[in-house]
Image 1 (spheres, one colour):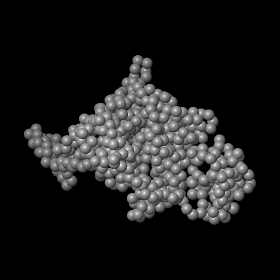
Image 2 (cartoon, one colour):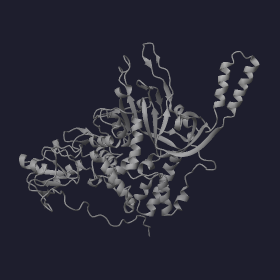
Image 3 (tube, rainbow, N blue to C red):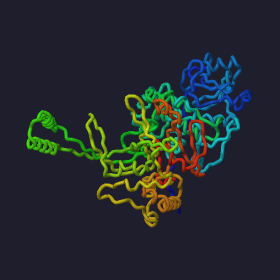
Image 4 (cartoon, rainbow, N blue to C red):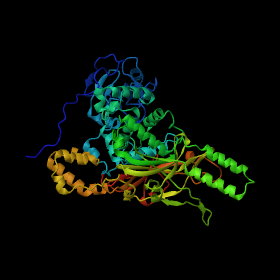
Length: 608
């Protein structure tokens, strides 16, 4: 008899959101009708659900905002004297949709409409994904069609630039193709993922309420899975990801208005519309905000962000020990300045005394182990040369040379707290499943922002980082278990093995123990050796491009004048795409490795 491994889930779920729909409505419980005589008045070409659900009359946002299905405008409430009711009476527009719950209503008669012909509107408003849909995304190469006949590839859609928000678009495009992160937010789809506690304009209240909910011990066990406990920024990010991968959209592009507004509120306008910023710094800020917004804490692996991007590095710091007296050395220097008439023997003796005092300075060394979400790499400064035609020759540097900072032996200069000069050595102890490399190209001075145009060349596939991973003393390099050892494991041990290497989804898709054993054997023999070898393939590449005329005639801000692109690959076809805001076009992989890369995201081999 085969052994069952699936756990039966108890309970669940009776539909959420009890109580009245709108405090301003005059009906305690609205009537429900399976048909409506006004459905033919719906104009789908005017419907756009990418904007924030706020009333076009009162500018109020909240849980009870309705969209008019005839003209596409948003109105608050549906009871008498509300903007939606007044609009329905004045214009004769009868069909409305609740922008949070996704229910349809007929006004001014005020009854709920349930009709199969409205399914496409529900899918466009709140895209949902089954486990089978998510598993088939990477292999799907079929083009979808919007209402205007334009074809698009789900997941490779353009994002509207809201005035210098291209750095946000590029980072979102990159993160949208990190498979575990994407799948996590796709599983949170549906109208339940939208919190009724606040919107982007009320982000502070939403975060405060989220913190109060987390403080309740009874809800702490689900803080990582219940969408209503997520911050407004995390909810808007998830909603944007679900729209980008939807094949049922009414238009072939996505407007990230709600997410950009949530970013502006959460960052206190550090990242705001009309103000260009560095994509690398924004990515670091966004990953931290998503980690906190999803219920993560200081504990490693407490959120999906840590599970995907977190690695471990050992930092050795050397600096002059506190309390060492430097005044004696200053006195010696002053005596040397005044001793111009001393003979050579006196001068030589003072120099020897100065060297002896310097040798007495105690250098303290401190070694700590910390976690990281991205590695910052310094690009060496190289001069620009002109060719025979007067054009500039851009220097190149291999990624291996830039990674020398983490070779485990080199000490680099750094400034510690209080402006203390330090020497630091970095040793990578554990690399994450998805590695983020931030190449620092911009340097600020008192007048402007300078950019290092050096091209960092790197391989698209099989980037070997094993020479940079140094295990602690006494710890042996991990080797995959043999097939015999896997077949001898219990169900609990098999699940633990898969979860340890980030493939818990394999165990969830297996019902019988025989299926789990077969899946584990396939994983151990085909994927696990590559994962333990620390080899990576490129997932996304964010580049910064400057127009040819900028910086030639006069001194200008290169950061503000430039624009960001993102290169991502379709897993099913292997085709690479260059995405800049609304423009999506195919590109060759040979051009990616020689672009002015700024942020690189690599995937450990064996994960897919």
